[in-house]
Image (cartoon, rainbow, N blue to C red):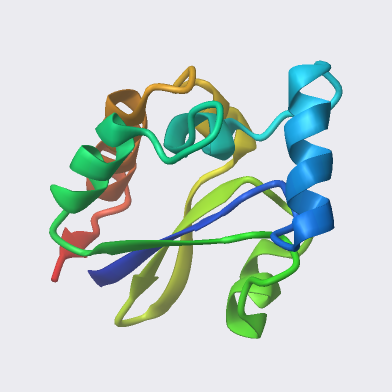
Length: 126
């Protein structure tokens, strides 16, 4: 199967209240989203993440729990964070929360985990 794009779902809500609640909770050690840690610094998107994302052969789109498309929610259920591949055969879960957490907030490590999973699953890039 060929990958047309990657999709990440954050373990946070995307509305203003959700963003503020996550930011405060993360600073107090009460909230944790490993995908957020990979893509964002204290206030903005990480430059290293932008470079890694822009180096991919396909788009990497992100959503929050509350704004993910229905077809994504049908696959993720209540799981977040998660990274999926949108393929010519449908959506495929590539990485779950524990696998994203193993990246330790490092964009390059997340990219390597994605590459490893793509290879292991026998997927190819469009």
